[in-house]
Amino acid sequence: MGGPLIVVPQSSVNAWGGCTEEGSVLGDDGGRDDYDRACEVEDLAGVIAVGAATALVLADEPARTCFLPEKLLFVRWLAASSEAELLAAAEAVLADPDTAWEDGGLWVTEGLAVLMDSAEAGADLGVDYPDGGRPDEAPVQLPAGRWRVRAVHKDSEFPWVGLVQLIAEDGH
Image (cartoon, rainbow, N blue to C red; front, side, top):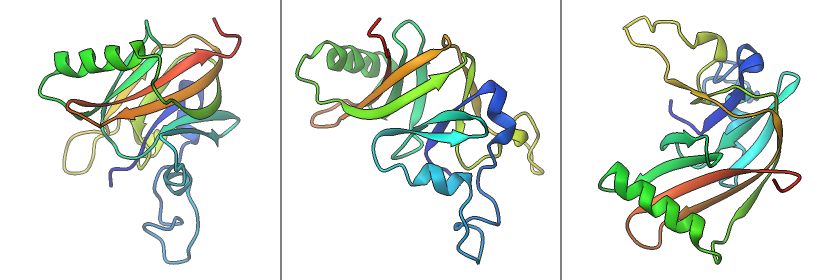
């Protein structure tokens, strides 16, 4: 499937239904499932409800992504020759006062979360596929808090990098 990536609080992972036969992708009835809701985020990042919590959608594409906890930053590999080149590009974007950040909303978290493909059901994480392998997932170690989400794609010159950063709502 491959869809936008999503960061779901650990406590709400099982509430994420992913892509189902009730949704518009696999279904015939024009219904809406969690995957459809994630795909509806048109900005580079956005916040949607999942269970009693909220999840952060890293929209656009399912680019290879890592989380740098010391910077509260998701780094998205759009086009680069190496990891070092990608991280240097990310540092340059962060240091540039003229970076045109998009507002991705307010995300309230309780701490530990999981980065995953929004097409997968949370209950299927850690479960083998019938033909082998498992859904990709990565832990996201972040403190509980209220976070302003900001995002940018730098793709005017090589390398290309996408960034989604969390800024404490109180500015610290």
